[in-house]
Image 1 (cartoon, rainbow, N blue to C red):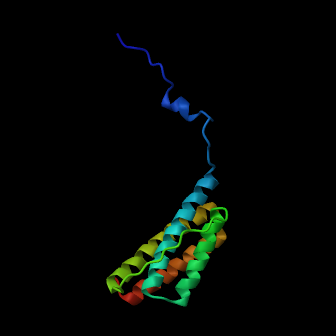
Image 2 (cartoon, helix red, strand yellow; image 1 turned 90 degrees about the horizontal axis):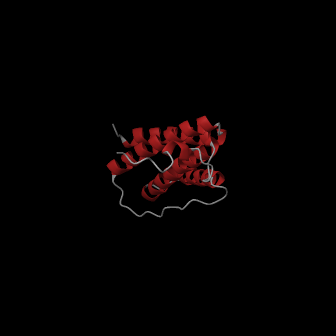
Length: 136
Protein backbone atom coordinates (compact mmCIF):
# COMPACT_ATOMS: atom_id res chain seq x y z
CA UNK A 1 0.00 0.00 0.00
CA UNK A 2 2.85 2.41 0.85
CA UNK A 3 5.89 2.83 -1.32
CA UNK A 4 9.17 2.19 0.51
CA UNK A 5 11.52 5.10 1.19
CA UNK A 6 14.31 5.04 -1.35
CA UNK A 7 16.39 8.00 -0.25
CA UNK A 8 18.71 8.35 2.69
CA UNK A 9 17.44 9.93 5.85
CA UNK A 10 18.31 13.57 6.40
CA UNK A 11 19.97 12.54 9.64
CA UNK A 12 22.24 9.99 7.99
CA UNK A 13 23.12 12.52 5.30
CA UNK A 14 24.30 14.93 8.00
CA UNK A 15 27.00 12.45 8.96
CA UNK A 16 28.29 12.36 5.38
CA UNK A 17 31.76 13.89 5.19
CA UNK A 18 31.45 14.83 1.50
CA UNK A 19 30.93 18.51 2.27
CA UNK A 20 33.33 20.79 4.11
CA UNK A 21 32.91 21.22 7.84
CA UNK A 22 34.09 24.17 9.90
CA UNK A 23 35.31 23.94 13.43
CA UNK A 24 33.74 25.87 16.28
CA UNK A 25 36.71 28.25 16.24
CA UNK A 26 36.27 28.93 12.53
CA UNK A 27 32.57 29.63 13.04
CA UNK A 28 33.36 32.01 15.91
CA UNK A 29 35.97 33.77 13.77
CA UNK A 30 33.39 34.29 11.03
CA UNK A 31 30.80 35.54 13.51
CA UNK A 32 33.25 37.87 15.26
CA UNK A 33 34.51 39.27 11.96
CA UNK A 34 30.90 39.94 10.93
CA UNK A 35 30.08 41.80 14.15
CA UNK A 36 33.26 43.86 13.95
CA UNK A 37 32.66 44.64 10.25
CA UNK A 38 29.13 45.84 11.07
CA UNK A 39 30.56 47.95 13.90
CA UNK A 40 33.13 49.35 11.46
CA UNK A 41 30.33 50.35 9.05
CA UNK A 42 28.50 52.18 11.84
CA UNK A 43 31.75 53.82 12.94
CA UNK A 44 32.36 55.03 9.38
CA UNK A 45 28.83 56.45 9.29
CA UNK A 46 29.38 58.23 12.60
CA UNK A 47 32.71 59.56 11.31
CA UNK A 48 30.88 61.10 8.36
CA UNK A 49 28.33 62.74 10.67
CA UNK A 50 30.71 63.78 13.46
CA UNK A 51 34.37 63.61 12.42
CA UNK A 52 36.76 62.97 15.29
CA UNK A 53 40.23 61.59 15.80
CA UNK A 54 38.85 59.07 18.32
CA UNK A 55 36.47 57.59 15.75
CA UNK A 56 39.24 57.57 13.14
CA UNK A 57 41.46 55.54 15.46
CA UNK A 58 38.64 53.18 16.37
CA UNK A 59 37.85 52.60 12.70
CA UNK A 60 41.47 51.72 11.99
CA UNK A 61 41.62 49.29 14.91
CA UNK A 62 38.36 47.67 13.82
CA UNK A 63 39.59 47.34 10.24
CA UNK A 64 42.82 45.69 11.48
CA UNK A 65 40.91 43.17 13.61
CA UNK A 66 38.50 42.31 10.78
CA UNK A 67 41.42 41.82 8.39
CA UNK A 68 43.18 39.59 10.94
CA UNK A 69 40.10 37.43 11.40
CA UNK A 70 39.54 37.18 7.65
CA UNK A 71 43.08 36.06 6.89
CA UNK A 72 44.39 39.44 5.75
CA UNK A 73 41.42 40.41 3.56
CA UNK A 74 40.69 44.09 4.18
CA UNK A 75 37.06 44.98 4.97
CA UNK A 76 35.01 47.11 2.62
CA UNK A 77 34.82 50.64 4.00
CA UNK A 78 31.77 52.85 3.90
CA UNK A 79 31.84 56.34 2.44
CA UNK A 80 28.65 57.92 3.77
CA UNK A 81 27.51 61.47 3.22
CA UNK A 82 24.56 62.44 5.37
CA UNK A 83 23.15 65.47 7.12
CA UNK A 84 23.68 65.77 10.87
CA UNK A 85 20.49 64.89 12.71
CA UNK A 86 20.81 64.46 16.47
CA UNK A 87 18.28 61.63 17.04
CA UNK A 88 19.93 59.69 14.20
CA UNK A 89 23.34 60.08 15.83
CA UNK A 90 22.00 58.83 19.15
CA UNK A 91 20.44 55.82 17.43
CA UNK A 92 23.70 55.05 15.64
CA UNK A 93 25.59 55.14 18.94
CA UNK A 94 22.99 52.83 20.51
CA UNK A 95 23.26 50.37 17.61
CA UNK A 96 27.06 50.53 17.76
CA UNK A 97 26.95 49.86 21.51
CA UNK A 98 24.76 46.79 20.94
CA UNK A 99 27.04 45.49 18.17
CA UNK A 100 30.12 46.01 20.31
CA UNK A 101 28.39 44.00 23.05
CA UNK A 102 27.73 41.14 20.65
CA UNK A 103 31.34 41.25 19.47
CA UNK A 104 32.51 41.19 23.10
CA UNK A 105 30.47 38.06 23.84
CA UNK A 106 31.87 36.23 20.81
CA UNK A 107 35.42 37.43 21.49
CA UNK A 108 35.17 36.22 25.08
CA UNK A 109 33.87 32.79 24.04
CA UNK A 110 36.69 32.56 21.51
CA UNK A 111 39.30 33.80 24.06
CA UNK A 112 40.41 36.59 21.71
CA UNK A 113 41.82 39.15 24.13
CA UNK A 114 42.61 41.84 21.53
CA UNK A 115 39.11 41.78 20.04
CA UNK A 116 37.51 41.66 23.50
CA UNK A 117 39.45 44.72 24.69
CA UNK A 118 38.58 46.59 21.50
CA UNK A 119 34.88 45.68 21.77
CA UNK A 120 34.72 46.65 25.45
CA UNK A 121 36.37 49.98 24.68
CA UNK A 122 33.90 50.65 21.87
CA UNK A 123 31.01 49.81 24.19
CA UNK A 124 32.26 52.35 26.72
CA UNK A 125 32.82 55.01 24.05
CA UNK A 126 29.36 54.56 22.51
CA UNK A 127 27.67 54.52 25.92
CA UNK A 128 29.39 57.80 26.79
CA UNK A 129 28.50 59.32 23.42
CA UNK A 130 24.85 58.28 23.84
CA UNK A 131 24.75 60.05 27.23
CA UNK A 132 26.31 63.18 25.70
CA UNK A 133 23.82 63.29 22.85
CA UNK A 134 21.05 62.96 25.43
CA UNK A 135 19.29 59.82 24.29
CA UNK A 136 17.01 58.09 26.79
